[in-house]
Image (cartoon, rainbow, N blue to C red):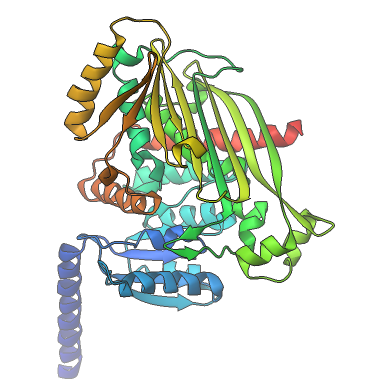
Length: 459
C-alpha cells in the first residue's frame, strides 16, 4: 500500500513539473509552430526571420522526399547566413503517417501549410477539428468541392475560437498600399466608377514565371507543381491575391457577402507549354512523372496556369487575370499591373520595361479639374507623407503624375511573408481580427472556384 501511495506521489510530482514547464514555455513563447508537408518554398519564407512570440523550436511533419529536404535546407541557409542569421531548431518526423502523427502529437498550437494544394483543404479541416490554429499559403481551395469543405472549416474555427488565415503578401507592397490610400481621398479620386465588362472599374493583372530565383538561388519546383489536379489551375491560384486586393482596396473594412455582393460574368483558362529541357531545368527531372503524361502532347507539357475572371462586386465591374511564362526577360521578374478608375482620376500601377520592371504608381487626371494639382499635392504632402515620410510627386504631363517612393519601403516579396506573420500573430495573441476578414476570405474562394467551374464549362 505504501508503494502504491509513493507511486501516486511520484506521478503527481512529475505531472506538476510538466505543467509548470509547459506554462513557462507558453508564457515565453505563446506560439509554437508545426510545419506540415512543406512542398512549397513559401513555407520556408515564413521562417526567414525570428519572432519574439514564436518558439524557435519548430515541429515538421512530412513524407520522406525532396520536398522536406529542400525545406530543411532552406531553413538551414537562414540559420547560417552572415547577416542577421536565424536560430530555428527543426524537429522532423518523416513517414507515411506524418499527418496522423501530427494530429496525435500536437506539439504546437499553429500549423503552417504551404505545399500540395490537393491535400490542403483536408489538412485545414482536420487541423481545425483537432483544435489547431492554421496559417495557410494560398490557395486554400482549388475547386468547388474544396470551397464547401473550407467554408465548413471556417464555421468550425469560429465555434472553437481558432484562427484560420491565409497568407496575403500583396497587401504589403508599397505601391498597392499607396494606390489604396489615394483611392480613399475623395478630393483626388472621387468615387470608384461602375465600369463595364469591356472597361472594368478595377483591373488587376499578374505575370509570373516558372523559373526564378528565391533567396539568391535558382528555385527548384516539385514536379507536382505542374499538375493542375495537385497545384490547382492558375485561375484559382495566384488570382486569390488579385481578388483579395480588389476587396481590400476598393471596399476597405467592409464585409463582402458572396451570396449578395458578387456576380461572376465570364471566366476563361488557357495553358502554358513547357518542353522537356525547361522541365529539367526547373525540376531537375529528366522525364515527366506518370501523372503528368495526361497533360503532354508530343513531348510538350501543357499546364493550365493562366486564367481570367470578370465579375461585379457590389455592382462595380472588376477583372483579374494571371499569366505564367516560363522565364522572365533579362532584368525582369514577376510583374503586376493594376488600375482603379475613379470619377476624378485613374490610379495605375505599371511594372514594365519603362519602369525597369519595378512597380510604379501613376495618377492620370480624367475630369479636367483646374484645381486637381493643388488637391493632389495636398493629398501627398498631408496624407501620404504623414504615414510614409519621403513620398514625392512628379508631374510628367499636364494630366499625369508619378509617385516617387523611398527605397526603404521597397522591402521585396520575400520580406512580406514576415509582415503577414506579424499580422497573424497580432490577430492570434490579441484576439482582435476584424470582422470582415473571414467573410471576405470565404468570398474570395467562392469567386475563384466558381470561375474555374464556369471556365471549364465554357471551353
